[in-house]
Length: 284
Image: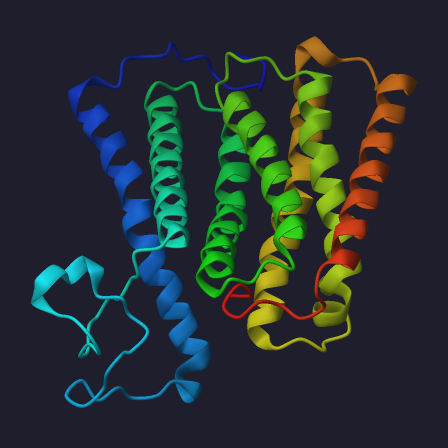
């Protein structure tokens, strides 16, 4: 029996087909996430969308640079427009880096599963955090696209802390990496900050009081439920670990409380500095 009470099974090489399966799984998420996202938006905003007349519409806000000499001036209908600006370059860099990170993470976790070295509780945490990371990417795309920056620092706090938490989760997904107090408290502390900040921001108003629209309720639940999982599952894994039988020391518990307090304080300051209204498109 192993440390989880399960029959032991030696790790094995994923083989050629296993490597191809890992690559396929890594590709599927970046390919299908955006269409699923737009499909969900269409479901909620179908009544507010408008039909586009492809024959008579025009766009005077497009610099037509990427069309070269083929089209200049006021352009006709295109499925995709983009201007040759620094913000477009930033959006492109962010998108490429995000897609590569998502691909590599899923490929890595798939290989661990095929090698029987995957800690499934961490897989659950990773999958539950995908929405938060996708939301961050979409928010920054809208910030740059709309030149709207009043909530930039507020969102950056959540993005950086979520990234740090996910790095720890992916690290602990390998069953040979030990579950330690400091790693667990890093994940749990960040999750507690997000729970408190989310509750103080919009969760209570939109979900508990029922004052939010349906898409806002789903969004806030999509944040809160994974954060609660990030509080509970790491502590559960710590308790099951043979190397960490002892209870939390007072200094470790105090450090956790200080981390949560300071994180919530910083987040509160950033929320007060930002605009009350949400940027167009970023709330989806």
